[in-house]
Image 1: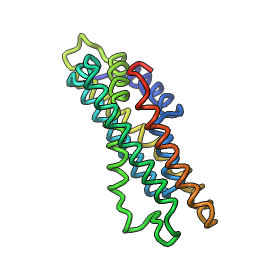
Image 2 (image 1 turned 135 degrees about the vertical axis):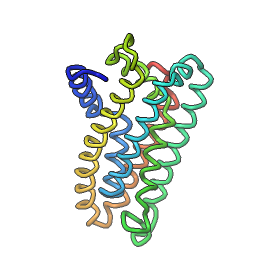
Image 3 (image 1 turned 45 degrees about the horizontal axis):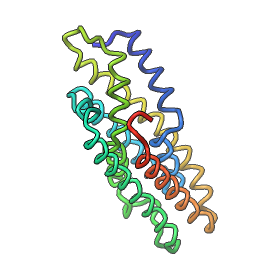
Image 4 (image 1 turned 45 degrees about the vertical axis):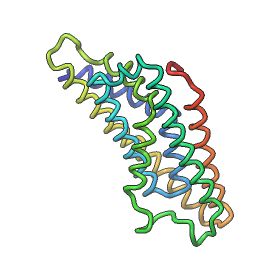
Length: 212
């Protein structure tokens, strides 16, 4: 198990990295503005769960294999970019719907769908996998017999703080979005903003290299 100083150092570094502007928190911000707090919290939880998959990949050596295979990296990168683009197109299409057909919350919009969106958007991003492959071992004692357990514990800490940080972003942005959506002409622009953010992230992922 990691000792207390290591855990505190890891937590502080993780908080800084999570708060820094990046693809996941931008997605949560835009989605919460357009779809409300509930949807934003679902996406935030999904992104955090997606991080855990990358941590497990790093622990099992899958991320190292991905880093060594340009073809596998490119295929997964393309899949991630296409998925983000699909989310962006969906948001832009939502902006064209009549107000009474634009679902923001309620039973018709299932929370687990937003969780799944966040999970997939994070899990199919190979750059996140390589980030954890480079980041996590810095806080693990490789000579200890429980190195894999250390990775899992640190991963759980990372996921927990991600839920808290992204959850705060979702609640804040959702509150602002709710106030803005009281004006009928503003709601479509929130959807357009979310669509533009998703499409920009898709383009950035598709055109970036593994070390950028």
